[in-house]
Image 1 (cartoon, rainbow, N blue to C red):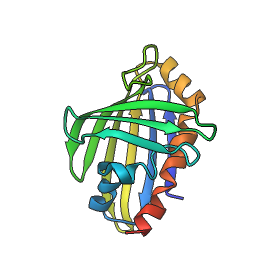
Image 2: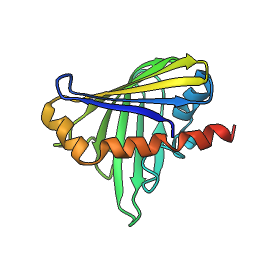
Image 3: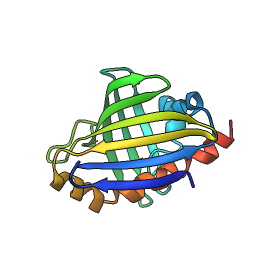
Image 4: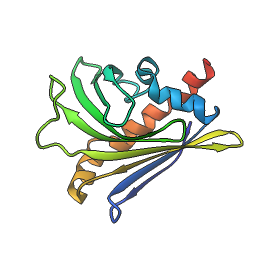
Length: 162
């Protein structure tokens, strides 16, 4: 299992997930940068993602949907706010309607991902910040922690493939 810790902080309105991966930061960066590779792990194992657009640059956007076991589709979007290959990236992350437009009434989180070289490979830290305590509680109740942990657990096999 790649995930070594998950910490929800209601004071800081954050969720921090730390994973250790057996590959150098430049290789781990590619699992985020390449949309076809990203599709192999983004989303829980039973909700695979399809990226329609993926433009990893400041101001660039990603549009995707995850498909559940019963065929239900959940749409999402990212807008990149910082890109420092292969050290970090940051993006706003939100739910979308069927056309890929940001969904009304759903919170937008700010994600910051860092890639730190360690002797065994890379320590990847994902920090999600929420606009309110209610938003944090809503997304945690929807399974964000379990979903992200399950998604990250799929990266080891991708890295082992080369």
